[in-house]
Amino acid sequence: MKQKEKNKNKDIAFAGVFIGLFNLIAGLSNLDDEAGYLLFVFGIVFMLSGGGYLVYFKNKSDKLQIEVLNRIFYNLIQQNSGKITLVQFASASNLPAKQARIFLENKATEFGTVVDVDYDGIITYTFK
Image (cartoon, rainbow, N blue to C red; front, side):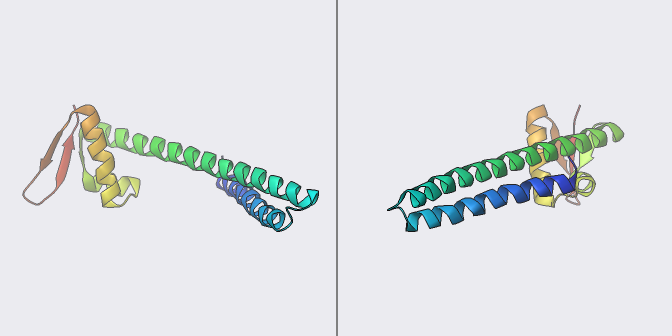
């Protein structure tokens, strides 16, 4: 999905939430009559559907990011004969050092790998 299309879908989802919120408030102020009640119900429906789409797009985005990080990780492992440093991964993935370390530590736990820290403080993960 192209970035423009993703942004359009998110905008639609946000619009649903805001329209829902507006209708919800308008309905609450007129719950005495049928129109107010309908606005209230429509407000809830729009807010729930818009919120649901936002969660859906967030989950989809997270899955895509994990796929990209895995691809970078496996490429670096192949290029470096199973060894990868924190700096290499952070640089290749454009992640901050803390997030890169969390990702690599999870992979190290998953694969039961060796983690070395040399005298200069360089962290090297060796995957075999």
